[in-house]
Amino acid sequence: MQSKCMIILIYAVVFINCTKIDARISIKCNNSHGSLAQVFLMEKDFSGTRLEWLDEDDTLDYGTYDFTKLPRQFLFLSGSDIEALGLFPYIYVWHDCGKGFEWKGTTVTLDHSVRLDKLYHVTIDLDTNDASFTSKTLIFNRPIN
Image 1: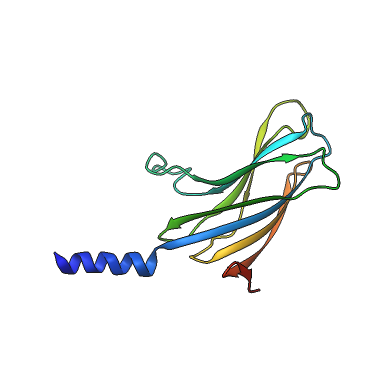
Image 2: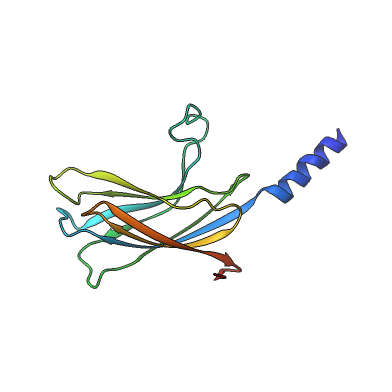
């Protein structure tokens, strides 16, 4: 029994740690019927699978993006989570940009972070439904690449 507890403890210390994700987000929308969008920094768990009921996606942080602010603003979101296999972060934007007056969601999937803190610079164009991002690994909250 004692050896099993030791193995579990070693596994927890070596393979599971807290990973931090920072995101600097810029959003473009020339055809917004409102002035705001809700932006979420999320971490994918089992969404879209049969195990979705087991563990829903985690909301790491959220904020409101104001399209009326000029020059275009940046929204900074930050969060951390503990996952054995690393984090699968994504940005979810709830907005009314585009034709019609209905609200819709836009998802931008970021790259997998295996137990390394990361800083993302994300640009989302809701008019064309395009997005791009760059990422840097953080050591002691400073970029190393």
